[in-house]
Structures are given as structure tokens and as C-alpha cells.
Image 1 (cartoon, helix red, strand yellow):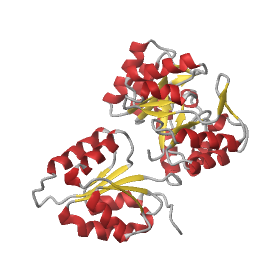
Image 2 (tube, rainbow, N blue to C red; image 1 turned 180 degrees about the vertical axis):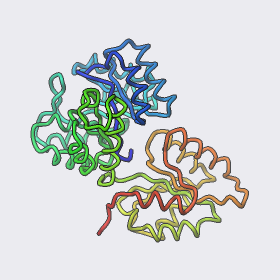
Image 3 (tube, rainbow, N blue to C red; image 1 turned 135 degrees about the vertical axis):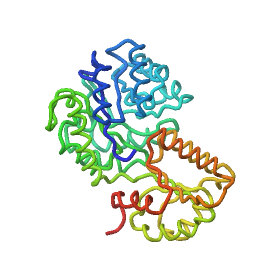
Image 4 (cartoon, rainbow, N blue to C red; image 1 turned 90 degrees about the horizontal axis):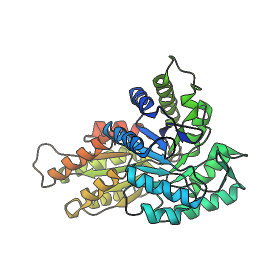
Length: 358
């Protein structure tokens, strides 16, 4: 994620009755991350919601609202049945991952002690951070869903501590109802945030009436806040052999912008990046000819990359042209920015929030 707004079609911990109509308005407003709960509408209607979101090129989320184990596991089974992209919430990760571990969905449980309806986050910050670390260490947990603004205390401080404590993405949820709170989540290092009731209630100051206008307003606030985001971006770097010189020059020019972000490279490209800028954080995959491009494709498909930069040479036939076509298709399908030339790559580098030394 690159600090995304996740619209929840929910109110009072239930999917709203007119969710299908509101979904159409939301898509008109331009939002691409949309969620709901497994209560409030029959399963067939929830399945239609998930299918519509995916058909529109969006990413679907189901959020757990139950506090007892039986209901929480029922929500996990519903997420699998509905084939959503992400499951948010819940407090029993070991039991839930027995249900979800063989499904491609991404799972983001709640850290800390959760009580009541609507849910409240309780306990001292150090206990919540410890809980976050333990959850993030679990294999089939892909991120965290922090009920930040349901915590009575220093919310910006708690968000920052949790984001700094774990390497996996953290989504902020609960009572985010102002531009100031969205900005605070970005500055804390969140990968995204959810808004439900506030958008449905027209809380955000929009230039026009209607739900679509609310969505556009929150997206505009998100875009401004993204410039102050402290979350590291996850960027793939690849280059054809005849474009390795271009890659080295580009990395040299943008080494300061790339510092603090997480680079993933196929084998040969990773070696060049590491040699060119040893201070950068680089994860090396297999060489392209040995499956590295397919590994990148898997990362795109599971939502673990924020951008792909591929220095491609269009003047020479390559044995990996089919792999490039596959990566291009996946990037389009999963709405991941893809740059195939230095100028396009410059635009991605210029948009990165600063995480290096001033």
C-alpha cells in the first residue's frame, strides 16, 4: 500500500442496507479500496458486492466485528467464501489463520485488547506495541488493523510506535472523521486507513452534495496527506541486460530519494543496485531467467508492491519478453504503477516521501 483510503460501506458495525447503490456512487467518486462487514446483508448480496468491486478494478475488504471465537471464525469462513482480497480485524489470529492460510486473502488482525460494541482499544501503549510485534511475527498475518482512534490516550504517539515496531503494513481504523486525523495517520507511517460512517454521514466538507462528492473529498485529502506519509514504499526494480547502464545511472541520481524505502530486484539488477548504492535496502530475488520475474508477478498479485520500474529495451528481442508482458498485465490488473523508461521512473522517484538524511 502507498497510504490508501479504504471506504467501508458500514454503519453501526453492519453493512448498510443500500450498499449496492452506495457502491456505484463510491466507484463514481473514484475510490478503489472498498470494504464491508459480514453482517447486515445476506451472503449472496455480499458476494455481489465483492464481485462488483473486483470487476471495477478495485480491492475488496471484509472487517470482523465479532468478539466471540465462534463468530470470528464464521467471519473468516465468510471472507474465504466471498473471495475478498483482505480480511481486517479479529483477535484470534492462530484460529483464523487455520481457515485463511490456504486462501490468497491478506489478513490484518487487531493488536491490543479489544472490548465492547462498537469496539474499543484498551491497555497501555507498551502492551499494544508488544501485541503488534507478536502478531506481525506470525507467518500468515500480512499486516495489522489498529483501532487507533478508539484508544483513549496519545493516539498519534500510539500509531507511530506501532508502525515503527513492525515491518508489515498497518491500517488505521475507527472514528477517522477529519482531515486532521487522516494527516496524522499518514505522518505516523500508516499504510492506509478506513472511513465508513463519517463518509456516509457527509461529515467531510465537500464542494457538492452526495456520497460521490464525499468520496472525492476524502480522496483529495488522502492525496495531500500522502505527501507527508512516512511509510516506506515497496518498489520493484528490473532491467534488461542492455539497459543496465541506464539503471545504474538512474539509481545514482535517485539514491537519496530511494533511501529508507524497500527495493525488490531480480538477481542481476539487485547486484547492480547494491554495488551502486550500498546504503539502500534491497531484497534480491532469483535472476529473471530463473524465475525472478515470476516472483515479482506474485508480489504484484498479492498487493506487496507499490510500484514497478522495469528498464526495458524495445529495440532488441528478449527471451523474457513474455515475462514483461505478464508483469505489465498484472500491474494493470492490480492497479500498480508501472514505469518502463527512465522518465517514467523519475516520476515515481519524485513522488516518494523522504525517508533519508536531509
